[in-house]
Amino acid sequence: MSFVTQRPLELILARNLMSALSTPAFLVDEGGLLVFYNEAAGMLLGKRFEELGTVGPQEWGSLFGPFDERGEPIPYDDLPLVKAVRAGRPAHAEMTVRSTDGSQHDVEVSAFPIQTAHGSQGAIAVFWPALVGGNGAGPA
Amino acid sequence: MKVKLWGTRGSIPAPGPETIRYGGNTSCVGVTLADGSMLALDAGTGIRCLGLSLPDEPTRLHILLTHLHLDHIQGLVFFAPAFRPQTEIVIWGPASPEASLRDRIARYISAPLSPVEVRELPCDVSFRHCPESEWEIGSARIRSASVAHRGPTLGYRIDDGDSSLTYIPDHEPALGADLDELEEDWISGFELARDTDLLIHDGQYTDAEYPNHLGWGHSALEHSLSFARRTGAKRTVLFHHDPLHSDDELDQLAIEARQRWVELGGDPAAIELATERSEYELPARAASTVATA
Image 1 (tube, each protein chain N blue to C red):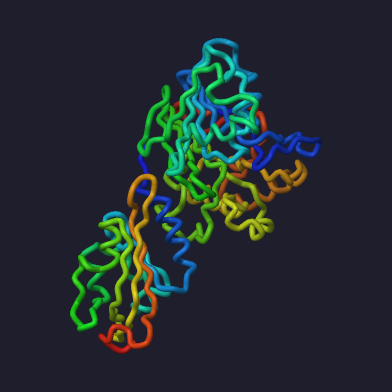
Image 2: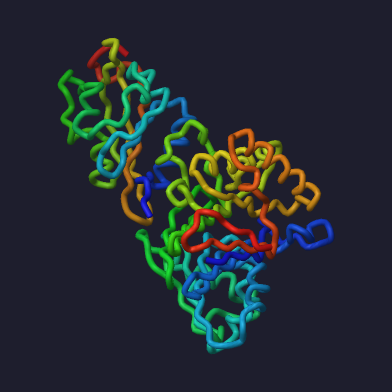
């Protein structure tokens, strides 16, 4: 018998939940592949997931060019989502992301791993609007 | 592969004159493989009669539990072969980070809920967590996968020769999702049911009932039909009837299911509601399924 490569149930349920949220949220699989983001995240980035599709781990970070408080690009390895999926630990950071129209948004990012009985299945990152002032890297 | 439905009801046994045709026993399906190996899918109250149908001689059988809700295990302590020393029973089920399968089942087969303890069962019983990969029982290859329900829950696919059976009795794949739009790899249970010869699937609610049971872990008719269509199941049996559904109501649901299946482009003979004691024979080298009930 041949089977399609089906997503783990935990990712399916996470995507279903994220689809119903008004908070921007991103989902990566255990290999760091960006497999989904919701409509709110699409509005933040200026591009719907359906337009972008699945994106490899080295690409998605640069898609929205996260910057730190000095305006420097945040290394891929330091992104909360990467930390969460690699270390299996929650991670949090402030950053500025860039939309496709060039606008910038100060956000706080909370990422946490999806741990199951079969080990890590990926991670979720939720973007929160930064409090007044943000990280100072650009206009919100 | 021969399949017999010993319990088709969900949630709680529903005996009585108003459920006598579709049956009141909870989930249990007996499967006899091509090499004679015997499986029971779930151990609801239907397994009691399955046990009574077995000869009183040395027997080895496998019980594949989808999950441990009471309507899927309640018949275990009334399964006659479990009280025969010459019987070997292997119970398969979902793993949980909380406790072993044996310990979780023992919560039911122990005081004050049960007059006997697991250790007192005269049969040779063992408990195994379903592996992530495919495994073999007798002539069949078995595959399990977690599916959308409440708590750790599995669906099963059994391939025996060229015939296949998929069993997902408790399933809410449309929770927070549009099954008609979703990519197939994002549909819970999809790979278990893809192109299967016989799909036994959750059909607990009418579309009108579903909104009041959102998140309870079961499907509305719309979802069951959509899942069957998307997966390409050759024949679908709607299972796990709501205990409040009388035979007359299920008759109406069956008519509606066939009509809507035709509207979806399907063969009306390929969709039906599960009836207790119905039998199906899946020929080893044929695509069609023969109902023998």
